[in-house]
Image (cartoon, rainbow, N blue to C red; front, side, top):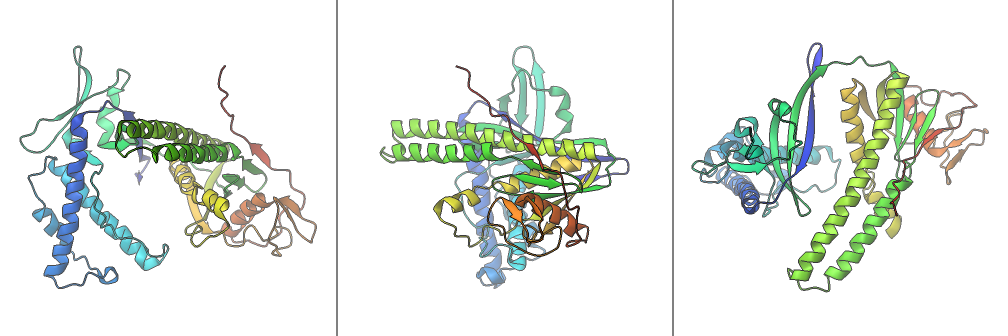
Length: 414
């Protein structure tokens, strides 16, 4: 997000399912070929300068990106800006890798040298053209390499052509058997006025979010989302068992594989819908309560070296806390609300009344001083207190019971 004086620019995205064309696979294969060429050129760059290939000593000079841009093959079927987008993504991945190596936030990070057969293709605004006619309907034309015809893709009748000038990029994505166009919009809006309140958010696996704004605690129930993850695991296990008995790439193998990913995609959409509804409800409550800052516990590396048993490990590794944080962040910025991250160490163990530490073993936190409250509510209280610099300062002894927000489970009609 780029802020201006009285307005700010929001980045929004939209996904659109499209009909398959045989050239799509060729285009994304060409993007993967550019990535592989970048990997080879990086090795050549290192070898010419006498640097070793041990990744801890890997070096990227200031001239490396420009040198690689000049040496990339120009005979690709892709538009020149699509090739540049792959190269820019390659260097961005190396930058992220170097940051991870320096900070040590992830143990043994993998460098971006994996060579794939297919990769998402990216078009910038200058390579995008829309048109509409009574005979052909709504269509988008995406420029290709020199001497090649533009990629012609039909758009649905309800596609909003009035926002075409806001589209900055388009990506061609293959997602579990379905081809999609991902649109990126730049939209300028008036800068909203933010409140002054502070709310602490404790992220959890059972309850996705538990919040405290200084007066009330709110619990967002996540059992419906957990049930969807259990269903997803069962569906995957069932299909994988049947697929393993088929000859690879046989007619039945492909039939079961398509059915599997169609079913998984539906469950993933249900999970995403539930997360969106929870975060939307949180934003509505923040607006209603005049919240200007959302404080979220930093969970980076929480799943490193965990071993709580097979079932518990599976639940923790499927815990979508990063998706929740991303949703909270971009929705809060659209409302002018700041999002802060702090270390949440001992926030679920510290008593908000007396400041003593005690590790709870059940859903209720019970301290020897007589304080009793929901354990995740205690975490949200202390996250807020820690951000305000008053962790250990007693809060109200008698607090109201937390408010609960539960998702409405859709019922199939008979």
